[in-house]
Image 1 (cartoon, rainbow, N blue to C red):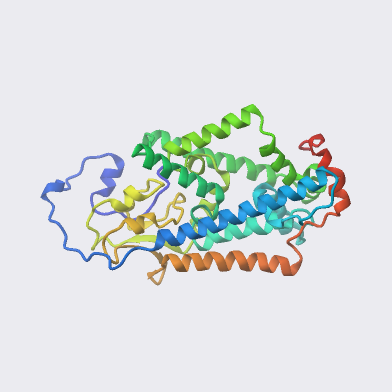
Image 2 (cartoon, rainbow, N blue to C red; image 1 turned 90 degrees about the horizontal axis):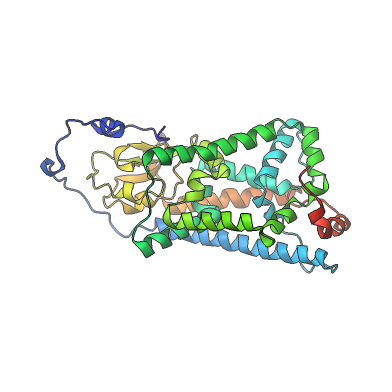
Length: 367
């Protein structure tokens, strides 16, 4: 299982299968004349700006949520309101609420923004590749800067053997399958009962407390993941993140594709070397892989004009980084704006209920 499909150049199929082909030696190939890219590629500064903006937004949400929780824990009056965006960190609640919506046609009162954000991020993957992972996800952003730190410090990142890499990649799909099975086996009534239980109501508080009061085991696991992310590119995202697995499957239906012009390609392989997902960009005409996060690192690395671009299927029109950023912003802001206007953004739980449950959060376990 490669996870990548596409049209290859002559002789590339044999190389992918590990079979020797009759392709001429590199030294005997004639160098192609090519037109160098005009101007500096701006895709990565644009993407980094979006990443940093979304990371800062999440930091602000986290700080506001912490202050809100502490007010109830200390018996004081909250000086800030509960930020609904914190529910973006409850993807399982978002999946449960989405099923409840599809079965009943009603938006649940508890954690509705978890559903809105879950559907929004999935929709982004359907329309703009796996852009949630490559452009928005705070965990993905931190993971990217960790492996770049490792590369800059040790001058390299580790590349796992192909057989091990493929085997580990399947883990996130197994985890996704378990979550889908668990949620899929619940009836709408069971979902509502879970969400309206004390644990379901303060699931976001329980999540905060998990990180505030880390057990030794959890601290060791998180520390190990951070360490591995320094040496192996996107370790968590690549091998273990079930959310990323779902986004990747949705991205298979996206109308956007990285496309390579084999006629003008000079076979320098800079695109493949730049790809954080280790995709063989230099040997494919289109990248259809569920692993492609739409980061445009390969496009930025290509030195040849009009040879490697993100394109819209059907019309073969180049999609620049600013257009991807604009599409992401419009979809995200449009979805959250609609939810706020429609009254499906705030969790409708009285402050008295929070005042009773939050100080006793440790008493409630998963039903």
